[in-house]
Length: 324
Image (cartoon, rainbow, N blue to C red):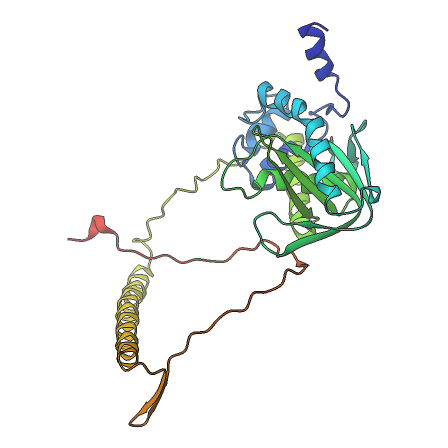
């Protein structure tokens, strides 16, 4: 087979996504959900592309090398994923379908996804959550398997992969998915994902908004950079805010002094007890005990996975540029 014929075989590979102008694909889910792809284009770039205003989608991820690499790694990824699952359950419990011949479509919002690989678990299978001890997601029924050939960062599953899979679950009507990452070094990591109905509800609103902007030729507003720093000095409440911040700084200083003093006091008490080689004693109105607590080893057990969450973290520091 010539190189040209070989490359054409890849282009005609089953499951290839069709008309991007009429259906939103899963690879664009992160862009639409958050206004900007985790590592690429903005929603406005995508809108212009769909509306035919530009011939480029502006995504750094969507390049030919990445697409071909993914296709070359697909079959080995499927094989290694099945080997991995055979260690978690009876191989006869798993039905594998690859390649997938037709995309899943959710016509209500013109969404489609070309799933790489589908599995069916006849009985429940407990899939470990990578990097989290004793946490599993239990799956049964149809399971989508998104095949990836690269991972960046600290090993946590990238946001755009999660967005892509949630999009696929909408199109397929499924509840469970895996993201199987086969690195260039041959290391396989399998991430289990459950359908997130709250995220999906918000996402479907963004998809509807996306198509409205496409149809009405309504551009997205210019994105505000996350590095933007607001100047609040002109606010009527600026004096109140400064007063609260100063009180907070005073508290932080006092708290640190308190913690340091308490530690010094505790160390002094320990030194006296150790000097006289005693672990329990009394002096005046006080009883003292210094013991070493041994934590018993805990057996492994299956517990539900903990979903991701957010919290507000307030950080305050002195603006050194204004400190004389």
